[in-house]
Image (cartoon, rainbow, N blue to C red):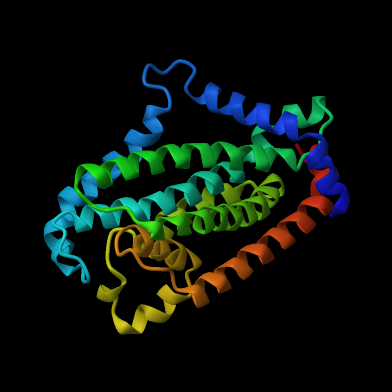
Length: 264
């Protein structure tokens, strides 16, 4: 572990420059560039708001803002999009970088860190747009938003730990990425991003409570819409799960890194 951290520190400038290059490459031939990273999730919010606002908009307790459902959606998607982007890209990170791993000598742990940095930049752009929307609709932003300084790293840790485990397994069993693409679609609907958890039947509440993304997404919603602190007990448990996933991911990655190059 110490050697891995030392390698990350030695290659820190390589990581920073790679994050910058990855961000530029994604929008190299796009007229709107990084604006697409903002427009896509906001368009998703607009679609859900248009379809579901009449059904669910009146069921938001604790607020009298007529735009409450839109704010609820944006807050949830802010956390969910960070998780999905990093996890989805980690699934194929080593397969997509196979030729690079064979030709260039560098610590392989740099690759997921580069993706994490790129996903963070994209999410910060979306956060800026989100806060702009709040200002436009007259929704106040108070000190509770400082909880994002905890929620964003927690979301990154959970996605990175799970993504690194699955990305490593996908090198040896390529079906992992395909299966997870389906799982993520189901996972989205098992997470209260577009609906309130209070509408879930009581017999399914246990399933909802066992979903770490429920506590992460609901924390974003509590902080940004309701201006209250997250549920610290469940958020602390989610943090423990995230750290456990990271520990398992690093152990699995360390034991498999040499063999991965041969398989690729």
